[in-house]
Image (cartoon, rainbow, N blue to C red; front, side, top):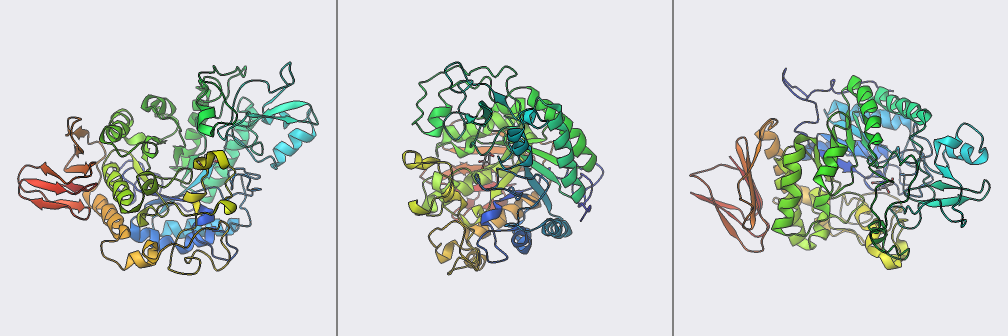
Length: 537
Ligand code: NOJ
């Protein structure tokens, strides 16, 4: 077991005035099941991650966020946790986790782990006790209610995955609440015992040396004390897509209750002892809503999801960047892709067009206040993998709602050409078409100008620029035209959001510190190709 951390809370090698370690850092999300399999069982694991730390270091990554590796029946592929303080044998052991922490820290890389406090697995010992003994101490760890007078669910809440958020427990005749699958019963955060449990869980991992937590469903932990029904603002169609179902209601009572903030204030006082970081899965598409969830004294940072929903449209891009950057500044986490949404190159049109657009968006993120987080394979320009319909494994999505399924963004990481793309010696847990040679990490590493090298150059350029903390963002495009452009401290950043080349006037001769393929600088202007972006000083 390790208690080593890189150093306590401040930037590596930092001076007296350095801020917290995550300031000016770059993160990388690892969907553990699909990253690298070290033992041939077809499932990515912790030792597989450790084997790839050199690759991540070369890329320029400062911290990794590892998705849940806890014991789980895998109804939601690990987001249904059966033991918050263990490692599922499919992913390795606690000793593997300790080795991963040690090896990452030796490289001055930090490790953030997922904590899933909104719900447990239905197989968690707490829920089993709660079900088996309605009068026992664990019953109130969850949210139970008698049926409505007609025998149906106690209120009109729907789950994020569609359908009622309530399931009847036949044995006791009561319903239990689950904002996700029935196999993911929601915890009752109005019970002080749940707070005590999680204080212990967080300390358990901090004492092992983890550097921070990504908090799943951070906006949803506490529910309305009276469990009031949400106002219906559309017609709820249980056969509609999960988004349509969710958006049929004004979510006044199920999520975003202000008491959730108290949980993070309490956790903050714990993690501050360790110099660790709290980053929230703060799912709201309103900057003001995000600012309420990340007010500064609880979660340090919150993910901003709007960039995963916008079209490649200059007004939408400005709207996804300017208000949050101005309102939240360095409390933001910028991400174009994740394990829950189509990969950004797919979302932005596929092929090299989608790849260029994604890189340009990442260039825009790179010098804004806040922390960019890449999703595994983003540095290779990966589009979604192709999963045959018969091989789909995500519990989300159905024939009528295929877009909701998340398998395409979760296919195994392509390390090498051929075989199982170097992900495993066995049969991958999720079957998908083999990736082309030029999509693999091995091929891109030796190809000048590959996506990998463009991303690597971007991160190197960002590092070379040095800390920008405390520098204001000046938007220089006046909100018009096809180019999104800002200046921050010594750097100017611009991206062309149109399908035509654009000439950007600059004063005199500038030095390009990063440029995408096709960018040209001549005296007095920078020429950006379609979907091109550059950084200069
Ligand atoms: C958000 C996670 O990112 C997602 O993968 C999961 O299904 C839900 N939370 C439920 O835990």
